[in-house]
Image (cartoon, rainbow, N blue to C red; front, top):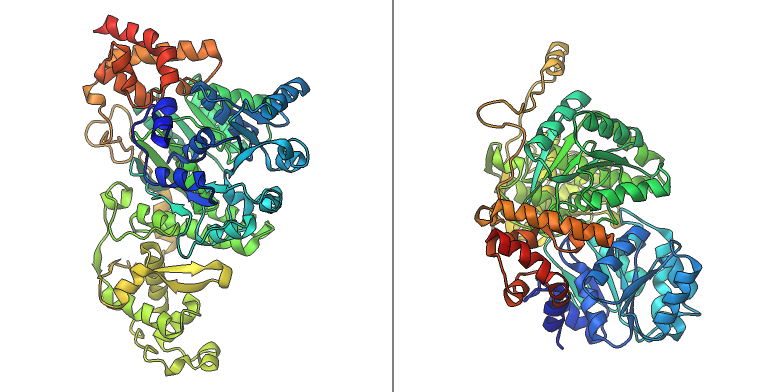
Amino acid sequence: MNAKDYLKKFYGYDSFRPNQAEIIDDVIRGNDCLVLMPTGGGKSICYQIPALAMEGTAIVVSPLISLMKDQVDALKANGIPAEALNSGNDSNEDIIIRRRCLSGDLKLIYVSPEKLLSEIASLFNNLKISLFAIDEAHCISQWGHDFRPEYTQLNILHERFPHVPIMALTATADKITREDIVKQLRLNVSIEKREHVFISSFDRPNLSLKVIKESKKANKLKYIVSYIRLHPGDAGIIYCLSRKTTETIASSLRAKGIRTCYYHAGMEHAERERVQQQFKDDSIQVVCATIAFGMGIDKSNVRFVFHYNMPKSIENFYQEIGRAGRDGDPADTVLFSSLGDIVQLRKFAEESGQREINQEKLDRMIDYAESQICRRRILLNYFGEQTDHDCGHCDICENPPGRFDGTIIVQKALSALARTKQRIRYTTAIEILRGLNSSTIRRNGYDHLKTFGVGADISTEDWKEYFMQMLQLGYIEVAYNEGSLVKITPLGMDVLYGRAKATLVEISHTPADTPSSRKKDANRAFRPVEIKTQGPLPEVHLTIPYLSTSYLEDKNLFEALRELRLQLAQAQHIPPYMIFSDKVLHALAVHKPTTPEAFGEIPGIGEYKKGKYCSTFTEVIKRYR
């Protein structure tokens, strides 16, 4: 069979998503690959189909036992032989798995980095290994947001298995982290030439993006409760900065009749497993959690993600909001921003082992929360995906600020960078533009540049704001691994040489707060939406179903199918979404297939699931027809 045959047979899809086919073809040819795809973008298929097509067993390196379990259970649900070797197994399970490996019975085996290294000389040395897939590969880099020292030892793979291709996969890696992944794993790829490097769009258009500046606990809770009541039955995650906050918010929501649990690293392992399983089984609607929760969750129907507190980096934020809407249907993300969070996160960064890196990353997160630029553009530009248009689906786009043609301002700034060969920080660039006679300017002879003093009519504070906007719009980028030097992007070059115009946001020059005005602001009531309020909803955003065909479906049939799915899942002790996603159920409720042929044509239903579930689901559909 070719790759598309495997896709149809085991996953029930007729076509690949962008880059998947090319990645699969490349690794089957025996090449190393670096794969960057957003959460929910289909990374796992990129190594699972080659594992099916190639001779031998694929070794998948994964950082969490829960993540391995989800992946293995999902593969088994599709009829694919897979297992995991980890500390959660007892000795008998390990013996059986090892025998199945040696007999060639398994197509994929999941391991932790530590387990991989301990098994190299024994089990894996006696296996026919088809490929190594390093999942969550950003963990190998000190620049990554979730650096794990045990990952750095994986650089011996090419030394011990020189002819086995290695695929590194991640959803969150900026330019510097990508380069470090390639270096650490010694991958035979070229980022510069884009050889064996596959970067999918980081855009998740089904996610709405919203930031609310609010510090009062009572106001945040009122907003959350009103949102959940407007979306009954929708599953969601509320991320909090501290363990205590998760418990407090969960208790408050339960008091409002919302099925809620909390999750953090201070809980017993068995209790964390219970909460995670209940969330996957749809037994609870909302989980209030620290960042310890989520990496092992493959739940496709999470409809909202709230950040009760600000995350410490854009990588963390992007990965966490990416747990919403994995099925492609609309989902909402809301970030509460407050000065108290910033102060706390600054303290964490100061006390961390990577002080400068973490402070830089926190600064970018703060810029995102306080910006008046399209939020999606900021996220995309952070990951090196420049775009020259706004998304129309974030709170800034829905209530745009005043803008003006800032092409000349941007050209002056970029010219200062270009004439110094892009070897300066933005603070030095401002000194050049302002014509300031500092020691740095004199020592490097920057006062002789043509751009020296061309921006003297703009204040230092305004120049800082404009540089921040240029960063967020993708005209410049900061090379943290080169002492935070500022570089011009291809999008910026287009503006510099007059091939494109630049639109900037007007800077508001309001006088400094007086004690009386601060008091007025502090007393100004935050007005969350009450359920009985008539008229427009100014705060709670009702998602537009622009990707859904739900208006065509039989709602009663959908609920009946969902109930059937739950019963089948409980009988098999697996999460409901592993049988069929909500998206498949919606399609069944729209098309109402009653024959095996029609049932198998629904996207997401492969041959294994067709044979296993066709008669049960079509019987319910026939009753409703």
